[in-house]
Image (tube, rainbow, N blue to C red; front, side):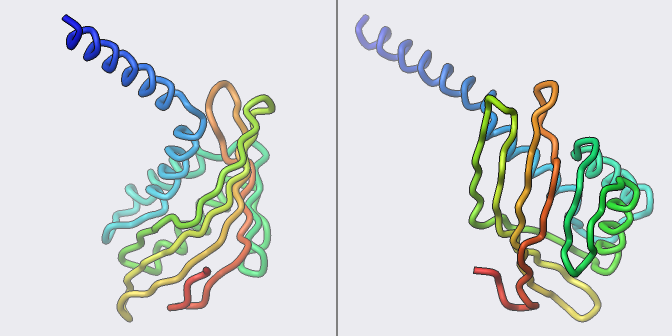
Length: 167
């Protein structure tokens, strides 16, 4: 009887921890970031309809009034169509594009419904010239609205030269 009670208590603790984790802002933010990365990624040749769908889902992750600060590379973008066009244009230059997240930090202010994320994103792409490996350091500001997290601002902080990763 004692073993059954202990097993039930352990199961209850695991379930409570799982529910708390599933509803946590940290998990939700990680999921939203992964969703954005998935929309930019490319596994091989795509038709226009697939690209359009991915770009629509990507810009759907951004809050109204968002801004993307690309520095010397792209200036600033605050229009969904322009953002979709820039990302689609970049994706069209490669046959494959994958990302690895490194050095992610998150400062969460749950009472204000904001979060600040710093991360290094390695890109591995393939084009006619073969594989390429670059890295980018980003700051992403998030805002929570109606229980969902939205990207408010993305700032490109640093770009590693081809073959040289940002530390």
